[in-house]
Length: 333
Image: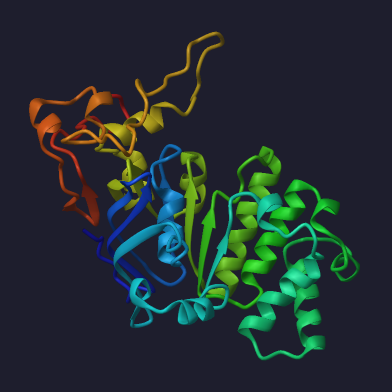
């Protein structure tokens, strides 16, 4: 199931599924995921840890092949990325499609200067000379707000703060002017002030470069401020999708409602905060029916026996639920 888009899609994902092998068992990490993204649009993938958000991004770029098996369609400029050979994918990664990984301290090579790490991307995806690459690297560090950019090219990741390392990751990702940016929780572990700066920076650069952006996050506040579309994931599947305004104003899936209720709003002191009961299911023992049924206040016998499909509900929205929430404005079910 995919949402319709007025523009010609920049990226079209359909039936994307990724399974990992472990100890002779098959673990379905992502199941039948589909969405469309237009040029200049920001799509938010939201859900609890383990819901399949990061694996979805890695599946798009073909980064799961060593340990997993990916099927489905990821249509990019007329090619299905799932079927492309590794050599062709390497030319696309970093050049046409770039990714900001979740933790910059483990993603950056501690033995190489940041200048050399930006240079590697430019050398692989552009025809620039050495002097041109150094000039572009300096421009990128300056663009992401790192002072004295020219001198800092020769410094190592440990010489930068957490927020600055994240900016370096963004500079590396955008150095070759990609048309699609995959951002995997780019503000995780950063303080609120730095979070706002990084998100503003990504959105500003996306507008300047006319890029599509897929932003993985568990923070609905971030989605509300930055995204045009949102897809809510649970147990490897999309359970609700639509425009940010419509989904956050009138959530229909009980899981989406639970996520919104978990965000404290005007809570009196010493009041217990709301949390969704139970825990996400193990991917090795998914329920027979709806994966959210064991935690759902609206569940019925049908929910426990049959998995609901993601179907359109009108106005560009889609929902996978037999008993959608009828109350409005994020009210509890």
